Image 1 (cartoon, rainbow, N blue to C red):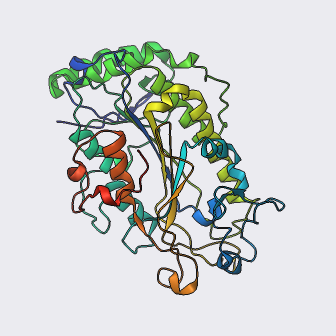
Image 2 (image 1 turned 60 degrees about the vertical axis):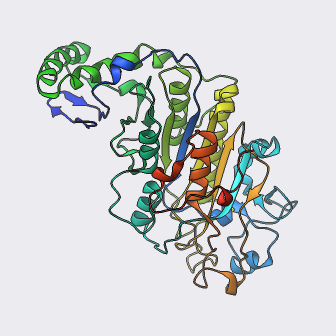
Amino acid sequence: MVSRRVFLKNGAFAFVSLGFAPSFLSRTALAATERTKQLVAIFQRGAVDGLSMVVPFGEADYYRARPSLAIPRPNGENGALDLDGFFGFNPRLQALKPLWDRRHLAIINACGSPDSTRSHFDAQDYMETATPGVKSTADGWLNRYLQARKAEEATPFRAVALTSQLPRMLQGTAPALAMSQIAQFGIRGGQGGDGAGASFEREYAAAADHLLNGTGQEAFNAIKMLKSTDPSRYQPANGAEYPRSPFGQALRQIAQLSKSNVGLEVAFADVGGWDTHVNQGATQGQLANKLEDFSRAIAALVVDLGDRMEDTVILTMSEFGRAVNENGNRGTDHGHGNAMMVIGGNVRGGHVYGKWPGLAAEKRYEGRDLAVTTDFRDVFGEIVARHLGVSNPSAIFPGYNVQPSRYPGLFA
């Protein structure tokens, strides 16, 4: 077996999902000798309204299409935060504005999939596998990256999702872990406490060594490796303050792993609640509250990582955008094109990338949505090639002709 996920439920015991190769621990180094490039991928599940997140306040058709949901122009009450004279941030993204001003945050607008689906399930699958329109793809694009760039000194924590289950993006033959809480990673004893866990470890490891050629013991070694960093005592650096939300705490734990020198290279987190069909709101309400939590959590991660951001890229994505016109329930329906954000010390920030197609009715996709002018695979491809250092990323994006000429231009 190259990868596996183990689940056990028996009385007081529960075992966290694990997945990594049998030979990993023989090549594990507890402390990294040199800092590697890192990618933090964040999925906004449910299709965030990119037109309320990155506001095209310079386009009159935006205001005609959204009489109650449009974000006011800059300099007005609750107005958009002017970025470049045409686009602005929703004011609830205030925490991210300093990153834009320092040119560490870039936006790719009118970005998305060439596939026309408005199904959340299909669109998320296509984005996570990077094979739009193909449902039979076996692995995710980040897992194919891990396969393409094998690391001789890789640890079990090379790729970690701060989620209860391994996301589609990281599924495949390359080892990857999913954990919802660092402190709970491992075996937890109920009434028996730590002693019960230790007893179970001895029994399970012995059986696993016989049946799985040592993989069980390596699972426990991975648990011990993480616990040796004493995650319970972690304190964010540089005054970073994470929201207490699940998303904020997930990013806090990504910072923990990054700074614990356990070999983290790819991290993943997701946040739901963006499917705003009813009472979406503008600068107040459900969407605004989500955006504020989203921005504060990311800003805290950047502050906490400090100079590690020189080697880190944070990528945000959502399966598709929302329709240009608001609906009769003061919400927005499923759309097409959307906005991505890329943050990092080496990112050519302070710029909105991608050709803006306009919001006039005749310029919309199928007469209703923001058109896609940048394929999301061109964003992924540039990050893989110019940040993570894969010279030829074609194997990571099967069925797509990766061309540097189509990259947005996020890196010098």
